[in-house]
Image (cartoon, rainbow, N blue to C red):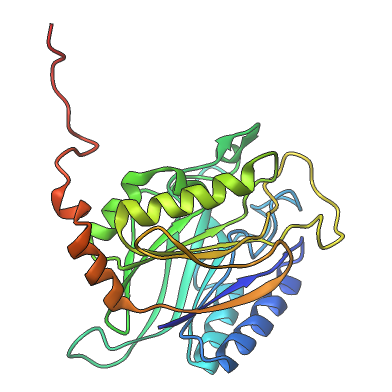
Length: 284
């Protein structure tokens, strides 16, 4: 399966950002990509304005336009947007839309659904939960018979989510992000992506916003606006491909058979005995 990371830098205007999506989808499709993955907050960059004023449901005009582009080019598009939540907050949603192929024995399907980010970025002085309502369910979608798990940014710090996705059938896991800049943060991004791939023995495709400083744009203090370095990590934890800091389309090939081989050699999912719910009385 060929997958593309559209490492773009988005701004305030959802329509300008939608234009970037359309252009990247067309370019990725021309290079033979089956899935095109965009960063978190593609609809509007963090720190670029209120999120509730641009949030739309999955059947709204922004998501519908993305779906039309996906169908036009025959690819599955995965892109960060914002949908309405409760009490004035929004949901940080990963839209998955487009043709998903045959899931096994049936006709080809079109997907159009959203994964709502579970773990909110209340860290490093930023409080995402002030404006964003958390999701409560994980998602694995099937694309051409292959399970693809969904995650967003801060989720990558929580290994239980990735092992749960793998247990539910994920063989490729996507993580769309708008990673916060700072000392050591790129190293943390690389380390976490490699660790989560090893935890789950899946391919992990981590896709981030480009670094605004590298692009010559104003950096919003305190907001996670992106550091680039989108990457594909193999199920053995090795980095197979990595983008730089600026805007870039990274196109990679994934061999699903490799997951089967690695899981025979390193059967951590089968061997695991401790779960997040495990517990007991401490011996005295």
